[in-house]
Image (cartoon, rainbow, N blue to C red):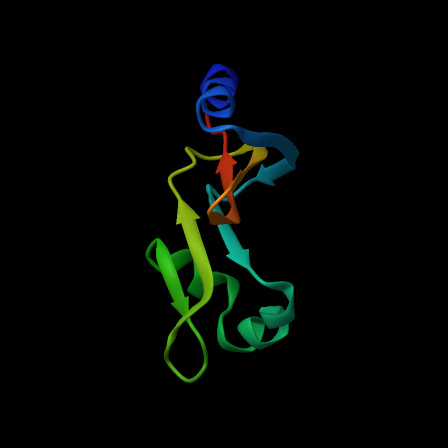
Amino acid sequence: MKNYLKTLNKKGKSIVSHYGNIGVDSGQLLIIDPCYLEMFMKKYSYEDICEHPQGNMVYPKGHEGIACKLESFGGDGYFPVYSMEKFEKYSPPYSKFIIDID
């Protein structure tokens, strides 16, 4: 994975940074904005999250996007998370997050 990130960094003039690490015990991750966490926990229990298919989860009013569930991590582990930021002359900056499961 590190060689892949270096290649991306050289080709696209991206900045690749190690953001941190994430511990996984259930084989799944949940990406959510912390300001929605309390609302989310009123709608979903841990069992609901585990049974929900991978992908978007819905707000209490029914539209998608309160959280995104990722699965298929192969079980327990401690995974590095990288940020790839790209700044181009004629486009807005953006970031992508990469979770290294190798």
